[in-house]
Length: 135
Image 1 (cartoon, rainbow, N blue to C red):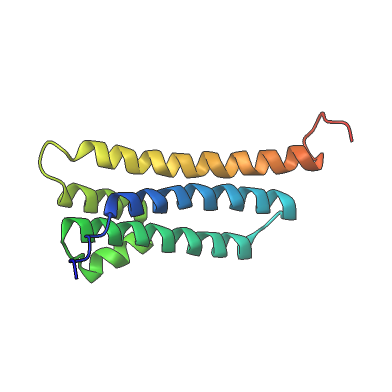
Image 2 (cartoon, rainbow, N blue to C red; image 1 turned 60 degrees about the horizontal axis):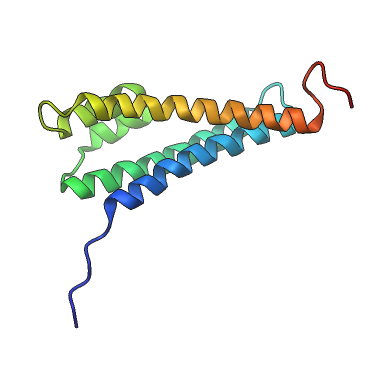
């Protein structure tokens, strides 16, 4: 038997990041479709889904780099991802190659926000709920 090929972490990480954008888009559509003033339940489920997919990406990244994150860092990521994910990226990248992954993280965050807004706008448009449309 031939030895098993090593996992393709880059491809799996790309899939996780694409899933984050997709989940954001779907959450935007659902938010607009349900036309909720306060979507606490949807927000919780959406945040949980984003957290799970984000942790999947972090796990793949750590496996690719052959490192283990301490528990305090995992807790920090759950409590304040905007601080602790860049910290993780800073500590796990070599000097001179730290800025781009951190900027890309914030780009993904913005991408998720835009995807959610696009989903909500499309749903509002197609349902006729955008001001100025005739129905």
